[in-house]
Image (cartoon, rainbow, N blue to C red; front, top):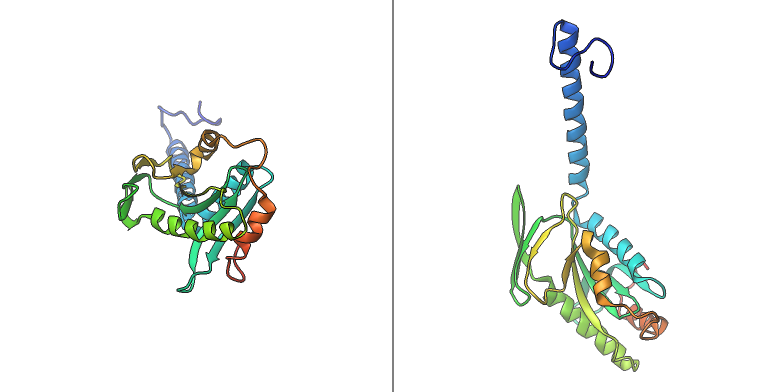
Length: 215
């Protein structure tokens, strides 16, 4: 018997048997389609930024500061970042990507490429803009006598279909959303903050344009 009644999986004798069987198949297909659509809707930049920054906030532990969707003041107007995290070990400038199951590139390459079974896209190496932003922050920290704080880029690929495969080479400062916890363990965060987080966060906030930086 299958799911009660008189329906038998391998012995379809009546019209009711066939109807029950096809209704069961249609229900299964409908559930699959809805689940796939929900997952696909969440494969976007906004969702990636939200979940990556939330996860980093938890992994960074206290004392820490998290700023999401920020714009740094620059001479030519501003430079947008997905986020800035101040944790015990230093400051991390974040760029997140919502889709891509295979990522190709080199740390010093001008362009990187991301793919999934249906599409491919080339995009600018995010390390260039993150490193440029790091220099701005380092200079601001130096003015406050905090030049020893490390400021590093962090690129996170957050496709929710599967764990992205990264082919970026050593020094890419990249990881996946699913592997963030292991990545943080490898950083060896000190038990106590290596710098004055409050003072450093004030210096960072001084670089942000008005209305950005949701802490």
